[in-house]
Image 1 (spheres, rainbow, N blue to C red):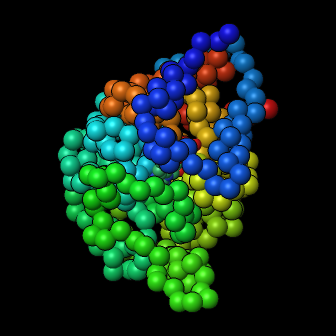
Image 2 (tube, rainbow, N blue to C red):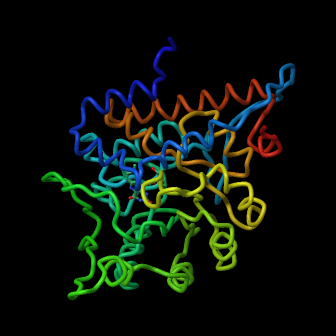
Amino acid sequence: MQALSLLQHYAQQAQSQLSADIWHYLHADAGSGQQSLANVQGWQSLKLYPRPLATLKHPHTRCELFGERWAHPIMLAPVAYQKLFHTDGEVGTAVACNAQQGQMLVSSLASQPLADIIAQAQQPLWFQLYWQGDRPRTLALLQTALAVGYSVVVFTVDAPVKQAVMDLPAGIAAVNLSQPLSPKAIGPGQSLVFDGWMSQAPDWDDVAWLREQCTVPFLLKGLMHVDDAIQAAGLGCDGLVISNHGGRVLDTTPTVAEVLPAIAHAVGGQCKLIVDSGIRSGQDVFKAVALGADAVCIGRPYIWGLAAEGAMGVAKVIRTLRDELEMTMALTGVANLKALRQVSLF
Ligand SMILES: Cc1cc2nc3c(=O)[nH]c(=O)nc-3n(C[C@H](O)[C@H](O)[C@H](O)COP(=O)(O)O)c2cc1C
């Protein structure tokens, strides 16, 4: 029998340490619950050709996006309320990310102040923006993040209807929001979805408006359709995070591994492409870059590390994936990410 990998070990440890409610929130899936499994399978089912005997000159995993340089392309996806999982919270994640010379996307629903997180990180971080129901409130949140030094804005558009929620324990809240968004009050016979949530959801006009307000690189997170990617590129978005939100929002979508090649073909020259949903190993990172991604995000795996060992656990998860990426590159004869983009998968 194979020994447990570090990630599996952390997942088990996290499950035994977290309350059932918090574990369920972390692992919540839309509908049938099959989407997050399908996401993982999507990457794992792609095959690699071993390429022994290649001479690798100065191999490395360095990655550069929007003028920022990191040691590797493994970024940390925005995950809400991180103090739910460990008292280190987002600050712990940021410290780990800096120690591992990577990048993190801090959620609009962070449980610690944006200024504290970036101060402890000792590097500029990226801010994940959620629509706040209207333009003035959304702009106020954006400006708060920019004022304390967030260097890139990632606007998440795939969760306009409230999904996985839990009653937050005392002391844990979205501390950066002046007032958390709740559905608009509806009248008798009205729909909670159409008349409630969707009446305050953003649309393409809002994306165009936000792009104009934003003085730093601006990305959309949560697109899966090639036509949407083309529209976003046309509006001047600097990048896209191709994602199905880890399977938490809409059930039975394609996997990111399935949609990425067409999107990369259509807009890869215009927009930087980051992917998430189901990335569980350095081999998955390798495959994502081979299919056209410039970088990847991981979600649940680093939260397992955070829950198990705080900042140290997050750092070990990033390092493990980076080691696996290097190993995969060595076994497939690939010296760097530029060369990796030329690799064909089976
Ligand atoms: C507990 C949890 C909270 C999340 N919170 C946010 C969030 O606040 N903003 C956001 O854009 N995405 C959020 N996501 C989605 C992640 O950013 C990411 O898309 C997803 O976790 C990637 O899939 P993976 O968990 O399979 O790696 C959340 C995901 C989880 C598991």
